[in-house]
Length: 335
Image (tube, rainbow, N blue to C red; front, top):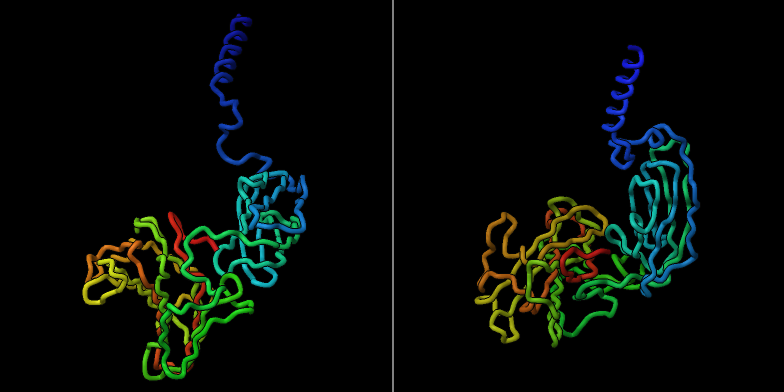
């Protein structure tokens, strides 16, 4: 009788053992080590002294830690102030989750400069910071079709309008550009009108070279409002003139001009990016009124105008800057 009872207990144990998940990969929830285990850095960060993104080099932050926990990597440009961040909670930091290809989160972009690197572990009390630096000797290559980045100055084909009392020009060799060392700036007081001034970039003789598909093409521009700022005080209008009949001239009475408005967001460099195909809609989501066929056709684009407007009642001068006008395909521009 005793042997029979022991045998039954043995069979029951085998049954429950066979039903138990013994694959640790299928375990649901954090491990005890991740919850209560001690934190330590198992492998140090090892970086070179410099990186040349132009030649295709990248930076992988290879660090192994003792447990899964939240980590943050922050890269800051010593001169530009550009920032790039990575975050995660993997136990191993590698090229799979922290590969820096030279870009920033937003404008300004990195320049040829020293960068400071900090890796922190916010949820681990008394965890050390990993600090390092690396010098950028070559900038990342932009993927897209540049309208202008102002690095090569102006063109005879450009048109300008500025109110009396407004100065507008390309400014170079400062640390204030969104990318590179040059940008375009307006500065002046216009107490009688919202219009401050505009810059119109007409297509070169060989065109902008844009694809025909507007639905995966993005227009991007860096914009920064400096004075006479506020949510209702200043904005940019972007005009896109298309040559529907192919005669090389935009005719306002019979062809498409699409308009996009960008209002003040903050006093920092901001990336303004939108899909070219969405220009057929106005700010209310309705079809925009145009004098052509109403279809955004980037291959017919012959002029891009950036118009700066600001509150005439403010009593102060108005200042704004723009930089890095570029078209990209499939996604927004990556500063």
